[in-house]
Image 1: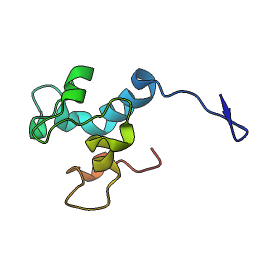
Image 2: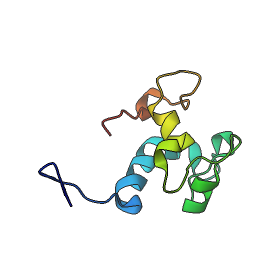
Image 3: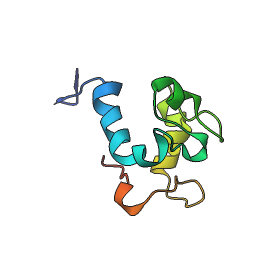
Image 4: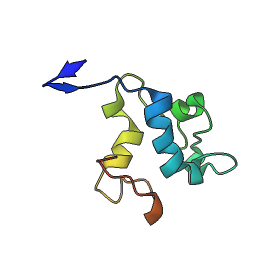
Length: 91
């Protein structure tokens, strides 16, 4: 696809999203560590969410709690992250 003269590719979950989640979220949300009851061990777990309900709204990512928590600047809404796992809007 071309948008505004720049090549834009469709986002591929496995290749574009999973590496970011592994780098920034796996420490607290994979294996036996499921903070907030939220597991990222599988796509089904990721979609199911945790103690606060569904984390992802399939096909409506802007409405997803996960996206809102990552992008929020409100300390009450942000995911609790260690300084080494900060995700910026530019990632």
